[in-house]
Length: 428
Image (cartoon, rainbow, N blue to C red; front, side, top):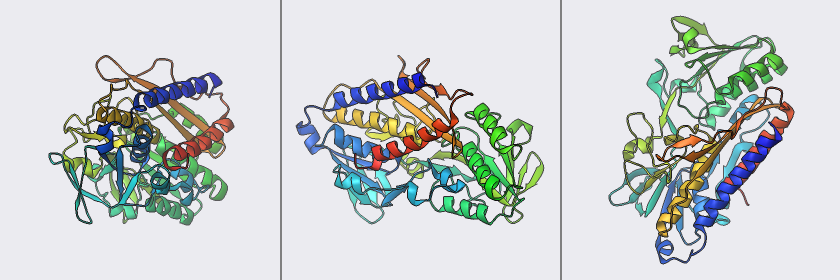
């Protein structure tokens, strides 16, 4: 990555954050905000960011964050665990600092239902909570039927590992048990899905593990697509780091997986059956279950929102951020969720205090590791056009130069992760 591009992104992101903060601070003793209660559902990249920044933008707003867990295991960096050079503890982040340092009321529970007319949230443990505004960051769910023979039960044998936690450790343990000379097969989904470069980083880091521990093993990627994010950079890295260990097959060239058989450990693509020692089946995806039960999705399976406020266009007073929302051309990524959450928090604070809405700028950066010492990245800055649609800012961002310093990019990747998890769940 060139210095000028990094400098531009830092300035752009800093200017956007400064404009949001300026719009949302001041007059925080408003009687409106002193009585307002905002509920945030989900403690991941979007939800935790929204909860924290609502409290920062207006400390008088009462913020309750509901999540069934006491901590969040990040999907970003979960491939590092699968690759064997991080642990699950390294990517698990407690909600304690949101409560103790930032004044968020953290409730460990499941949301069993939402009544938009009464503006109430029902909890699995019993009782309801009322809200003035509701922010949902429900993540993803899977379209299990997108691959015949695949299901939640089948994922216990052929893990997807696309929700970090037990599935991450399951896939890692399968790789450790696999014999040298075995075959790892991945099914990569069609767009849209969470973290577009994620499957290819995963293949890279599994190859890194194989290179050092099981060098006769092979990796086969059967892809529903004909191209993928950072493809040229990944394939150049595969060739230089792993030789012919990784084979990628496009959807139009025999890579479209139609069915799997967990008993035989096979995947069938365009009539050809492939035998795996370890299989990683990543199914098609859709908005999280709560978005469906609340009526926030359209025919695409995702949630349409106003891109200035991230308020649902289907149900008022409910905002949807992160992977579940439709925010094209932004990818479904952790950084996108973080950026959207800040804009959403700013909008909610402005609405509650009868202030003018911010015209948002949003940023996404995605680092990927080809090996622990070989990094690549893609970045973009977005703005609203006159039609209220997000467009990429010309000349902002881009991908790593082919001849860039890959070691330095790997250091940036580690630094980015450390900084952003501190921004969301940390002490600062």
